Length: 337
Image 1: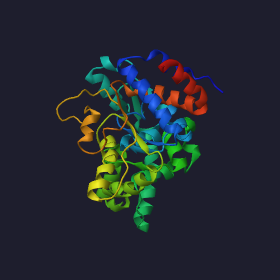
Image 2: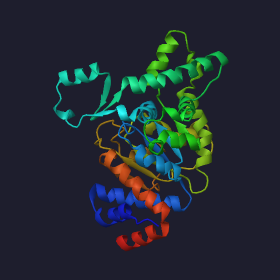
Image 3: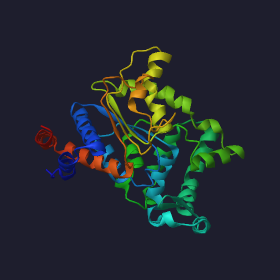
Image 4: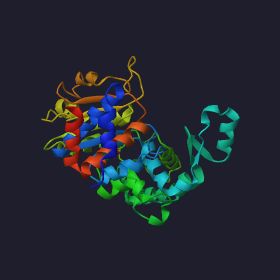
């Protein structure tokens, strides 16, 4: 068995403030998994461009993540990283850029995301050549699919497209497992825009992509199945629609469908958004109790930090504990008693 370096490091060193929140969230996540529980990850921000797949893909394959809610941008950017990884360019000095510097990046057909950039020709246009014919064929046959299903099919279609490491693509890992996934607001993405342009020209019918409402209607049944046994927890990166859409499934089943439903079994959010007036990203978990999204008994954790630092730490520690749960429990006893 491999040593639990990251797991032990967190238990030993993370005693107070945000580090304490991370440690407590890690232990609760580990115990939830040990009991046979499940976990949904809601991923906002630009986490795919930040290469979260390096740790997220192994976590999916190891059975630590059982469902996903992602923005359309995160969905497509996991694919971009797989097909165009070597063409990305990093800009570590981005804080000191002028408008002229960013204009040069535009002229070089790159699209900057903080300190890295997505290559238009090697990413957008390569994927476009494959996915647009899929949309056209679906229009001809009257086939309707969820947005992610087109990407699930494409990412597994032709391995010669891979330029990055397949083992680091969370989209590929999710597709291979056919993981339940919702992509709310996918219209707000590069390929949402590309899809709209082909709808405008009449080449593609808008109805071939199932709507966000259909995502929720389908998610009702998925949630009821996922929440059996020890229940399913909610691990959220950032805020906005990626988090708010799936967490609403519980009160919607309860009040709108008027059916019995189990509450979320765990909640953790990593966010650098401060609590402010009306901010969902910065809202405390207790606010969700008033909306019947969480209950007073839900284990709740908030780590106010940078998810690009915290999430890989959490996932690495969980992977270690998954491989050697007995040793993980010994370490918990050693450092928490």
